[in-house]
Image (tube, one colour):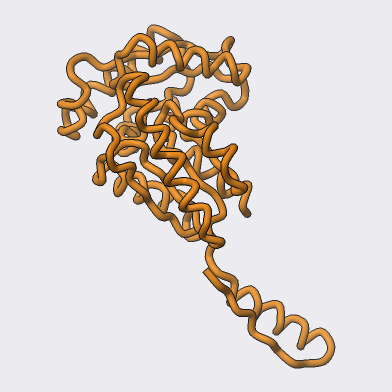
Length: 247
């Protein structure tokens, strides 16, 4: 992605202001790449739409789907499978000089460390950034998710500890039933997550609740008016951090 500046000839302050204005107008919009670690193109489209709205014109959002990975990541093995594709796709995306940052858009941040080590552009995981946003001001926070795998749930506790947030972490509330079936119906998903959020707030004492998964982001926005505590949209948290870094 190449940008050509416009030369303005002038003398004194007026010429300098014109040159600065012209240069600013010619500056290309920075690109933030959102990699969806699963193979659901519709989930990618949804997250790109959310990220674009959050960017408010400050950056161009480009989505990449991790073809070959499971359509929904629910186990540690799914995450390991997805991580390889995330790294490879991220490395390829970073070759474009217009790419200013990359977001790994799955809650367990599969491939985040490997990609971060392989590219020079900043890389953000939606899980890590959601934890940080939820914990702002020292508030207690929990997670509502459709993921019931015990090892994956334990990984959330470990992430909280690794980020120094163990004392604020109030645990996970998991929706009942098969996650793959649940995410196919927006109404069913909203109803199940509503109950999980209420449990996190009323029983666990959470003052913010993270929607644990990129595909759950749209549900968080639909449910937010029903709750006084913030429902943290993980994709938006990561895009906000990326925008702060790339300017």
